[in-house]
Length: 330
Image (cartoon, one colour):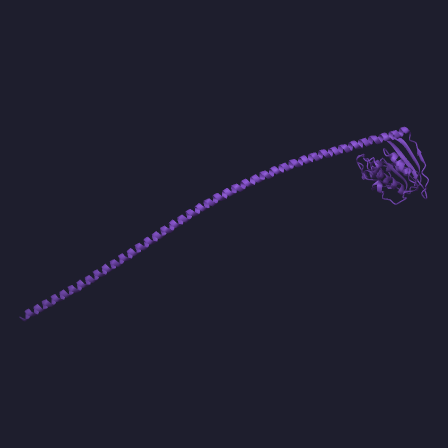
């Protein structure tokens, strides 16, 4: 698997040196997968285990511009096809300044007398120039091109021991004019690739922005249409509700009028019935009084007639008695 190949090879050399191993190979990386597929910390550890050197390596995630070690820690520092990825699309002074931070970190963590090697495909003349101006560096060697996926070059050197010298470093360059031409061509090629990539990214961003704007406009239009439809539906529903409420109110009013009329008619009928009942009662009571008066008058008449009859009978009996007595007397 990919990951930690230079680290593993360095550990294997340390193990096979024949001397007692007292140090370790420390590896830092940010584990990009752009140039190296499946470049992961776990894969680097797996490679170390497969090669039998897991105890000789230690891995950390860190940026080369901020190496997480004290000054003068290492005997050797190696960078392999890494530093060109720092501000990789930048070929100006700002990009060079960022890569220079990594070069300064390499020198900082080296012990006096320690060695470094920077292996890369572009910016090598930039590294060469920086090291050549650094008073702490000596014995700079620049060689190449080496045949990799791009022609590659190595800048190596030594950190001065003791106090920094004002004397410039010795520089040995095995590069021919042709090699420098190859380096320049590679830089131009990668610069063109970077420019094309940047333009493609900008074009893609522009297309995405246009697409997003169109989608936003379509979404806003759909939202406006939806809002208008909802408003129309709400207004229709409100109108239908108002019409229904009006119809219901009119129906209720008509029902109320009809109920009031029915109640009035019922009250009038009940009043007429009551008045008729009262009149009939009065008439019945009068008829009963008339009947009672007639019956009383008839009874009084009968009583008077009975008295008169009884008197007539008494008078008759008295006359007959007197006549009898007279006849008897005669």
